[in-house]
Image 1 (cartoon, rainbow, N blue to C red):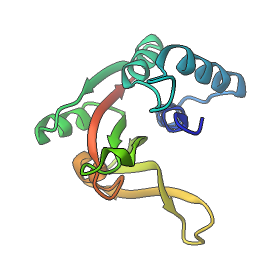
Image 2 (cartoon, helix red, strand yellow; image 1 turned 45 degrees about the vertical axis):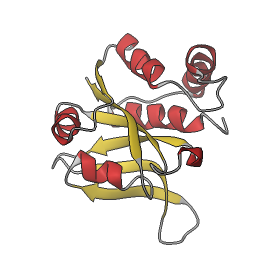
Image 3 (cartoon, rainbow, N blue to C red; image 1 turned 180 degrees about the vertical axis):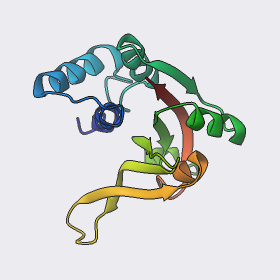
Length: 157
């Protein structure tokens, strides 16, 4: 979990955004699945985005996956999805700064919010969702100090 917990949390948050709930047993099953099928370098660098996409496809969702940096492709993925999961390098100038996977939700007004991005609430005691960004690109640009997208997974009911 220390290295691949963010993919599990992103999946959980995406499912919540899609109106689903996960029981403790569901979470245990998801963890086991990602450990068994999706662990990249034995989990040292998290879970493969392809396995995250496969999980949603197998559960009846439409999935659109891209590694494109083209602004139009990124925005189209956001527009055509109910929720998004993004995997990115934390620092485009130093890949040893590791990667992070987050859930990005979209509200009724089309504004994007980041989840699990290490943004503190006002008390500085716990993490909170971050932003209400107008574009998916702007949201992704605020997930770390210098992020570089590896994969964007758009998910639709």
